Image (tube, rainbow, N blue to C red; front, top):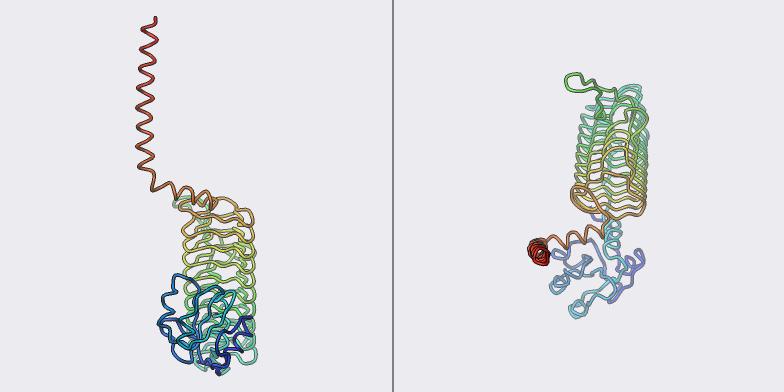
Length: 358
């Protein structure tokens, strides 16, 4: 739903940008650069898309300083110059998009245990299950199919999308968003013994999700064997991520799709894990480290590291050198074979010379 229109000058003030052109133009909504029309604002974050500016019909475009916007000005468009166009666009999109409103009604087709406590303005859709001694904070929204096991705690303003399961005893902070199919607190993967003698280790810990965390669809966060699995405040997790038992993820981390983190690993503050990163158990990833896509991490990583690569991650600069060499390997191999033959020839001649001298 679109919110009330704002002038371009108002939007520039919001993002700390500068208007070039008509600051009084009214902006109703944000749109992509190839679909925007009159009344829309769009953005250009990378020079590779400069060619799209020529046919842009938006009333205003967010650009970085140094971008050539002469064609836009000729066409009567206005420009909002911002240090980070994508970030500015995100802030403007939030302002121009009215959040959905919920009715604060508990459906009579939901199952709510009489011992559960629901805060003011909680919306509970049909076919939600809320177990014994559950506490749900004010203005939380539980979509159809949500399961809250016994003694779960859900903070204020949380949104749990369809078919989310939060298992027994787990805790969500405030403003947590769980997308469809998320499972919080399934049993950790714990077994003792070998072969037919394997026995299940009871998983008696919990998961604790701190404030302002958002978790994408079909991601799983396993409960601790003992103690807690923790997702730190402000962390953002993509779809299809697996986080194992007793993992601790620090504040404001970002974890992309299909990453997997094995048990008892500690992920530091503001760490970024790209898609399909795999991390072994019982190691530590230092604060503000970045791990590139499809990297395997088999040992602890010091703070501020930048790693990338295939089966096992390496320091980023080293990995870049290796990647640069790969296309040259056939040529290098031919040179090595040629040098080997020359060395062999020289050795034969040297050996013959010794015999002749004798």
